Amino acid sequence: MRLPHLTQAHAPLVREIDVVDQHGEHRRLLIPAERDLTVYVDKRELVTLMTLGAHPEWLVLGYLRNQRLVRSVDEVASITVDWEVGAAAVRTHAGIDRIEERTSRRVVTTGCGQGSVFGALMDEVDVIALPQARLMQSHLYALVDTIRLQESTYKSAGSVHGCALFRGGEMLVFVEDVGRHNAIDTIAGWMWMHGVSTADATADEPFVFYTTGRLTSEMVIKSAQMGVALVVSRSGITQMGHQIAQQLGLCAIGRATNKHFLCFTAAHRLVLQAGLAGPRIVRPRAMEPGLAR
Image 1 (cartoon, rainbow, N blue to C red):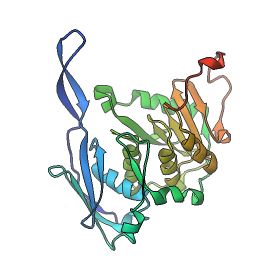
Image 2: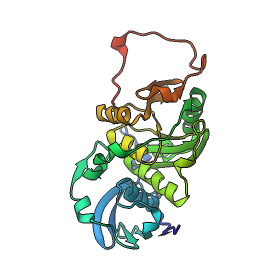
Image 3: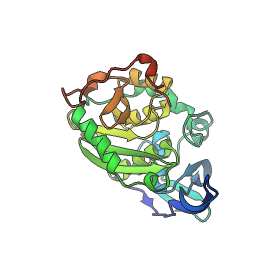
Image 4: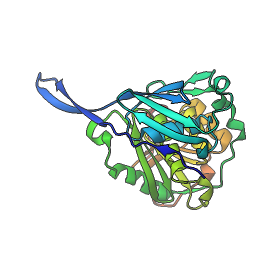
């Protein structure tokens, strides 16, 4: 398999600014350095992505993969990112078949910064088949704790989403971006460049995708396209995200903090272990918070 040549463009992830607090005092504060990146495929403008810019080449490759514009990594010859002009130039070996037709219909998603997907992405849900996979409750708790301890831009500057890919109890990659859709695309690109295939997992050592953001239809579909049957979020789930997860048999777990979580779909993939959750606390249903924050 021929891997594409990727540049290794770097840009500052945070910027220091002056702020005034409630007491009128001036302070210095770090904020994420959001920037625009316009993607050109074989000299044709495709899309502009708003991104933190941590791994722009993986982001672009994963975007092409998750939008189903390229089916294999060896279709891409190179990705060249130039931050001075805010552009990523993608060169393919044989072009993208029917690219104008396939990119003519867009769906604006609920992603941060108004993400969008090409309409054909939604049309392919029915053909996705997920692998056998199950998640032990102890592994879920270990995963959440690993994320809690992870050094991150969020801890220093806030205002970003984090996503990670686990295999069994091992975190393979952690990515942050201004939008969770960018972070999952970057992970998809990383998987291709590192030859990571979810087909290599076993039922007891599955791939698990983690996100700090809510589980929207876009996040559920992209996880499923990557062959990941277990998705964990610190946040909630939307109605369409729930509907598609049910349709696919994808296990969607949300509100995962400390030892608390809610399994929204495919609970048969979650292996509960007696005593791990601690004592049961019963509270009135009227106190339950909304699930799609």
